[in-house]
Length: 252
Image 1 (spheres, one colour):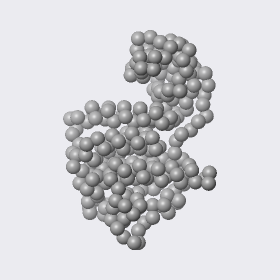
Image 2: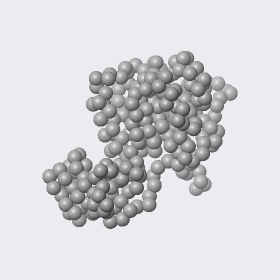
Image 3: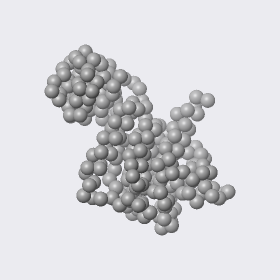
């Protein structure tokens, strides 16, 4: 059943109004009619099975039939701070990271980022990023859309990190030594409900200055397995590992 995230202002008790791109998708792409069923997500994380009662030009009205009890969110709140990579790699991280359960994303202007954030194009880019995250949330049946935060530099990232319970940065040098910080052991110490910040470097990795600042501010330096991962692969490794630990191991 197709799922849509609807802003809070569009909810009126048991009636929900859908407009814009979602209304177009419902009527023109999916070709739903009155009587068709969809799922609407409220910003508070709850989802409802709804029946379409009106299909207009750019305007859809539905009635809530049943509130669902499903919850597809990770038991821990993981924010990915991604060093800005080249090309469309950040969009890939947003899409796949959303599917894997990330709570939020922070684009990080790292010292070795080849890409330099262009403030003049920021609004257009952020709108595109937001659309990618929203569509990935719908596809993966998330209860919430991950938050997409503004681009931060190293000092701003350090300041923002103070609100997190666990702070991690993936450091490629950890993969080259025998005595390394085990990511698996660190994950096993994380508790449900905690806020976790994971920082991933760009293609060239973190600079020495960034590494020193992370360590001076209580970040754990970890390796993500014995192999060096691409910048767009690393956050997916992290999220998949956390998902396995908290959502799958309990069934073994």
